Image 1 (tube, helix red, strand yellow):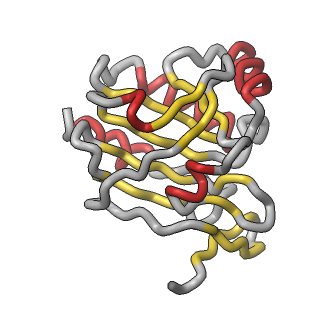
Image 2 (cartoon, one colour; image 1 turned 90 degrees about the vertical axis):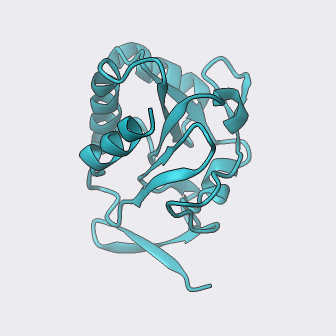
Image 3 (tube, one colour; image 1 turned 30 degrees about the horizontal axis):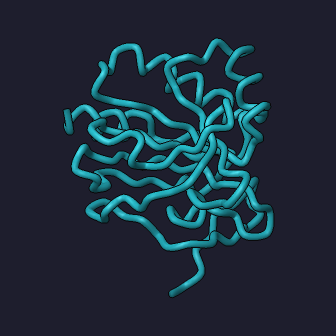
Length: 169
């Protein structure tokens, strides 16, 4: 397997884990909710998922992305759930969501095991942060859209993710 690289302001960063592509079965993961309870893929069964990974909610692009998906969630309906996963501690995620007014996007912390990062191939090996990526998973558990943003300071393709999610409802 060749090494997969993203950049941060032009600096190359290697990713750990297997690459996930459209058509793959979505891997399970073990994360933590803002109230410290466990969360995994199966907890969201029956929903179309937009899974976003970000380096940290306390950075400008991650803040912008999560707020944008929170606004978009209002028009998506109950069949689509947006999850944002980062290595931020659950307490920091809860604080950030409260300050930002983010209520429609559910944040999950991958800080304990880096399970999401490893299983979705977005763990930045040397930094132990997650790369910016968006995966859309259908109710059948199959990935319909996968984007790892090559320059993590850039925003993802919102329209592509939202179109893929809406097509699965």
